[in-house]
Length: 440
Image (tube, rainbow, N blue to C red):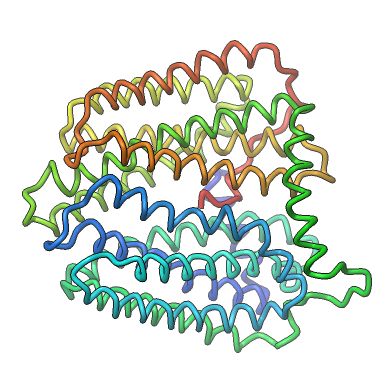
């Protein structure tokens, strides 16, 4: 059976449960809203006629988008183990709908104010609680023997919904011509997701009573100590530690390319007044990259059965080095689309393999803490790349020097990892899974 066929079969099985169907609908509607909201923010910050997109603005936007996952994410579980999760899904969705209405009001300003970014940061911080709450609720709505299938289809469907939300948002933007209407549409989707939570019983999603549960303050201290423990544990697990090192390096160079593509779409490929055309180009690049992500989910399990995982990572890094330079350095729309497709394959393929290396080489008692540490590395290196791009990229996004730097960075990482990879002890043979976690 193909991967796509297996996914559909698993989805049909778990959708038979009424509780899962309702939780699934909450996630799909909410992440549709996420995609629409991201288009609204991108359109306002980068593609409004009265503003010019700059690398510093991109760095600020990515910091707002990703830092909540790094700073709020590890602590989300502390509160989700104490609050009724149905109420979290209800009230958090209503709260973020209200905050997006505030964002819509701030869109009427002629410049991207600190208040706008602060409110957007709050929206995305609340979003982190919602996504964690949805995952923590799964064992309450599916039987134990279907939990693996549910974990496979639940986040993947959410990611697909967010991508669909981006396409939907672009369509709404074309119809209405205003970012305010787009933000209000996202708020409506968030409000709908919150209303759907009312279909679930107040206590149906847990948490279960536990008299031994530590206080919130103690648990928060444990989170910080856990991140330190994870770093210490990784010192004695070279395959996992090198995997995280590679993905951190990859995210840095990938982040520089992402900022460059935004600026090229807005300021180089189109005249300043052609903001809709620029937004359309960026949406096309993201869509093509998304196809690359999906193809990586098909090719990576096959490749991992024919070669060592470290070898496949090296090949993907080498491919990223090549396409970043040729055709990337041609600085035409077709060239960028080709590069985005192959960089999408490389980005997701590397992440799938690193996820697997961590799962295979990290002891179960440390796995949750290591994945929290992994999330911090994954997002902070991308923000660091955006800050670096802010200092080095021209407003047009066209820079031969940085293109060569990115290509050389991928190549150097591939060479170092190839040499190190030969010394790493392989884990027991296991197929690489379809990505179950966010890159979200």
